[in-house]
Length: 615
Ligand SMILES: Nc1nc2c(ncn2[C@@H]2O[C@H](COP(=O)(O)OP(=O)(O)OP(=O)(O)O)[C@@H](O)[C@H]2O)c(=O)[nH]1
Ligand SMILES: [Mg+2]
Picture 1 (cartoon, protein in one colour):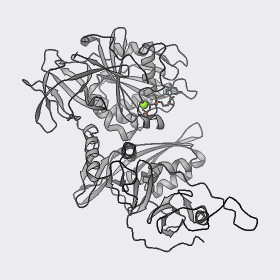
Picture 2 (cartoon, rainbow, N blue to C red):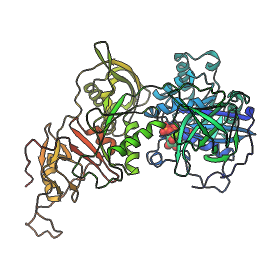
Picture 3 (tube, rainbow, N blue to C red):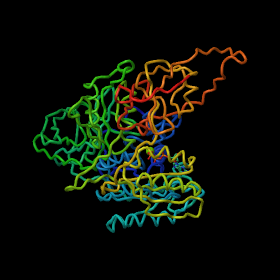
């Protein structure tokens, strides 16, 4: 992808008063990355003839595949001689830890709110974090072009949210811009059409202050984010809050544990458009990337050797969910992966913790493997998917929520769950959530056919709920949740009611056998697949496991003489994503992940149970 020019248009230092550093924060899908596209485009960041992908900042493969931002990213544009560094953040709650740490680079925030949906759980979370840093905020009511947009109602809701979060008067007096990131306009009024983003650019320049800090102070740069490139290695990204940086300068790295390590700056980059551009020096207030220090982690400070002034590491919310990552122990272990040992896993996982401070990795005390704790199912499953694509092979256990003890009492994490659902599916949803120990707190009947339901539910109860919800509501529902705190343990909860269809011995599946098995439940695979003893190939329609032989049967030919063979018509297998598999397994089962396959299996290789007839 050829994007902005590889060489900087700007030489030397950028004047401090001509810098603005802003973060774009919002609930998932409210249009952050689309807005960044427009801010880039209309400020002339790209050449006229350049072909630019939509949502250009979503540059990671997985982001493009899923249509969501997974990692926050830095970029910049210039407007009327002012250099605006912009930080695009992910809106999904599982990646909230990133928002918490990258806000350290910002001197102000654009809070985007969907003009129809209004503030959602993650709006609350990100606003809380921005207010904790006393950042001035511009509220952008986005998607004003939508037919069902209700800007007045949205503003009122946003205002209430600021009040609820105790925003001080000067921040409560926030300016409002109405915008359609999709159609590329912004306005001071809630109009449905417009011509340019001009009003938003102007507001950014006038309302967000230039960065603070003295150029004469000792060097101080807190590393808020880590980037990796195969050419440059690991890069520490942050804002210079004191002094300046230049190539060949001797500095010290103040680590999170208090130690100081001397280092020398060898390469320095500025973000221009969505590219990194090499520079010789950078001044106070600039956001830069520093290469050449392989040991860099989020939370270190680059500072002056003579007069070190480290900043304390940002404290972020603790993880709520954990899974064990274990070297693959299946009969097919080592066939498909490039990195398969415990050592490989260890190195990779610890490397991840250097850049993702919301992730905690601990060695398992009595067996090989690692307990990996994060913010939610998506946080962990994205890590698994990335590792798999890099060539890792391993197995994971069912996610467990992280309990807490308070005296004698066991506490577990709870979420606030907000559901918008078509009335006709409401009954099913309420019933399902009831069995998952959800407590309904509120029901708001909208003017449309959609009803909003608010639940308080143990995090445990939400595991695997999303795909069930999507099926139950035929896609006519939206669910959002946010961590609401620890509460009393809600008692036992059954993960999966149905048993598994387990393979008796190593074989290759054949259509004939599968045909006779498909009445027993739903199958996850078709014919011609190599399977092993103990592998799970489907879900039984009853609550017990059954052991079957899917490789047994007559060899079928294409020729079917009348009255000879049965007509074998297979129901298409159930398509399962990595998330579905993770949600499916019980405590005595594993998900095996390799670069080519995702398989399920029983933990215990000795199969108890009855052999089902597949004749
Ligand atoms: N109608 C309308 N749709 C928009 C607008 N802005 C964004 N969208 C659509 O909303 C969806 C989400 O847009 P993104 O820009 O990916 O949202 P995001 O906030 O970056 O999402 P995450 O990073 O995953 O939290 C896309 O389908 C966009 O086309 C808008 O102004 N109007
Ligand atoms: Mg995005």
